[in-house]
Length: 362
Ligand SMILES: C[S@@+](CC[C@H](N)C(=O)[O-])C[C@H]1O[C@@H](n2cnc3c(N)ncnc32)[C@H](O)[C@@H]1O
Image (cartoon, rainbow, N blue to C red; front, side, top):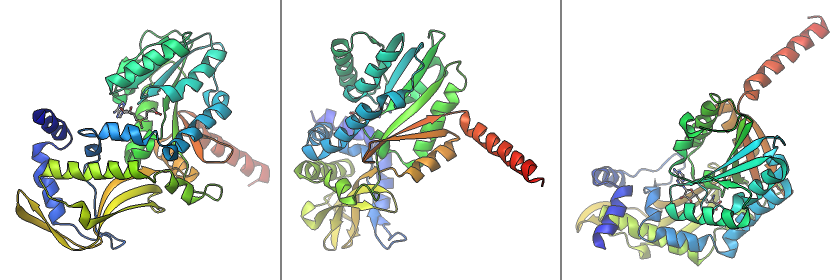
């Protein structure tokens, strides 16, 4: 059992990374806003039962409020999000599908309009793939199921798209606010990765990223914060600190910290952290490693929320055309990224600019 645990932790924090992480802790400095922050390897939260705790948390009524917004968006806007070519074969690839429950509305919509539909749940978790395969076989038997156990990087290879009918249209979805955990640069690479692969294929294709909306004049900040309140979140963040201690052989004591949660407007993200309430020493293997000062933050979560301007800047950086679909209350969004029209937009703007010059006789 101990060996399994150690292997799991070592897959997130390989032994040769430990000295670098210790050095980070020894050199903590205030950032531009005067706050001392340390971000442990995020994958630690999933180790040794962390995934099970996460699964409990996403069932809480508070968190389900976000999932309900996603469902509502699909109910309200599935047809416009899918924008299916009615005669085509439609292939829905559900990136990081989990058990696939939320993509059902999209696949059902495709079945309403298209001659044939294939659904691919794609996930690194075998349990997720099995659950999704079972769910679609029972609830949407008219869809052909083509499961893929592996990473979404696999779907960024042209070899992934073989043996498809001539008139295939592809919709890849990234649901469940998964994109909220991506750093912005990774998100740009992710969009570009898909669009540049699809450019080499003879099929129309789009990437639809479902995201929780940033606070706005229609969405109060407190709504965002409330979705992350509760004992289950505290359990997750306690677990994260246990994993920090286990992976780095440290003795952080939670009674020296208070648990904090807030919306960071600069990062456009919900952030959770442990904040030191006094100065105290931390030891490695019983030997002093560093002194943690009062106010130091150990960040456990960053969950990005998306304003329209953030989505627009992602699209611009990825050279993509963007269309934003939203719930009527603007709480949740689906951003559709496609290639081709962005460059054309530029050209059309240029053309209309030339026309304007012509019209004014300049
Ligand atoms: C936040 S969950 C969302 C699950 C589901 N789409 C939903 O809406 O409930 C993220 C999912 O992405 C999967 N995942 C994480 N990294 C992945 C990767 N590199 N490739 C494919 N799936 C991944 C996880 O196993 C997990 O099932």
